[in-house]
Every structure is written in C-alpha cells, then in structure tokens.
Length: 246
Image (cartoon, rainbow, N blue to C red; front, side):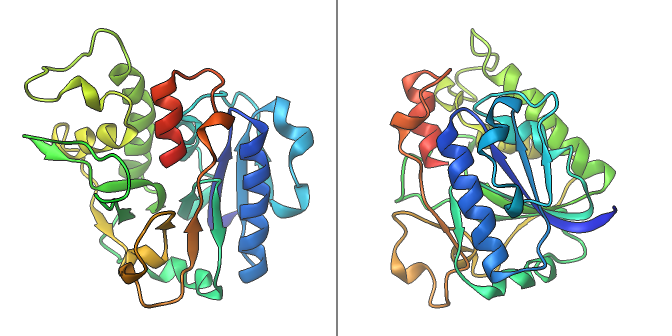
C-alpha cells in the first residue's frame, strides 16, 4: 500500500526505547486516529512491540546503534512527507493532524530549534548547533533523501579516531553530536536542501526543561527523556548522557 504521509519512530539499544515508542505511537493515534506510523527496530525487540500501535514495523538489517534513527531516515516508506519523532515523545493535542500543512512548498526539512539554556550546546568560532534532531518533517525527494543518507554515513566518519577535522576549525568536542553532522552537511558540504523552522516550534517539540513562556498555545508533542542509566549498552558514558538529551 502506498502511503503519502506518516510518522517514523526508531527504537534501538534497550527495551525502554521500545516501551516509549509504543507509548508515543499510541498517544499519536489517540489524538490522530488516521495517522500512519512506522517503527524501525531490531529483530531482538520485536516481541516487545505493540503491533496495534504501528501500521508498519521494519526490523530486517536494522542496526542496534545509538544513531539508528539516521539509518532509518533515508528508508522512509512514505512517498511525500515523513515526520521523524524521537521514541520518548508524547502527543498531547489533536492539532497533530495539521502537521502536513506546516511545511512550505519550497522547504525540504522543517525542524525545531535548540534552546541554549536547556542542556549542553556546542558553539564554536565557525558555527553553532541550532537544529534539534529529535523531531522534524522532511520531503521524499532525491536531494532530501540523499541528505538523510549522507547524515548517517558521515556520522561514522565523524566518530573516527583521530578526529578527522581541523581542531581550530571544528573542535573535537563536537564529535558525539549528530547535530554537528547536520550542520556540516549544510554549511561545509553545502548540500542543496532548504531547511526552515516550525512556526511556534516549541509546541511541536516541547523538551523537558523548556520554559513555559516558550509557547502560549497547547503543546502538541512533549519531549520526555529516557534516563541515561537505561541506555548504556554499547555506549561510552558521554554518548549515553548525550543520547538521553536528544
């Protein structure tokens, strides 16, 4: 069946992410019964998946990795628009059904902004991480799918030792951030995609710790966090801390 628009959720590393993905999908269905939702997970987690919450579950060849989400993005089953959403989010309002109307015709990726006061932010002389990687809407067109594929592949280059970039231009403290890969693709490689921000973006991705003043409208997605103690498998301590914030 061909489906034009839908949500993509990824659950990897530990069973807590599968549980939060189940909850997230059900919360979307509660507020938007017609939503189509796809889950990417690994074969080992399939027994934990709430099959009633998802319209499609993909596990074949899916890696169990801290950035499995990057692997999944270019493999979206949706022919028009995909809304990527972190597993630890909760849908709070029926306005979620308007999501497909939010993206302008000339925009390829619609995303939300990082709040500098809410967690560690990397800023350096050549740039700043401003795009929140936990929630975004993107088009299924060749240039955007290529961008998503590069995001996954270039992240591996980024994690190599020694740090593959000039320290004075891009400090190695950026190494763990997939947002840096996103920044590099836009600002160094200059891939031809247009990125913009959701209007009143906090109501679409209201992260734990945000100030109430960020939005006066009802919150659509509340972004919880899975405690880092639950995601230590296969990660160093720094990666675990950072994954819990994304």
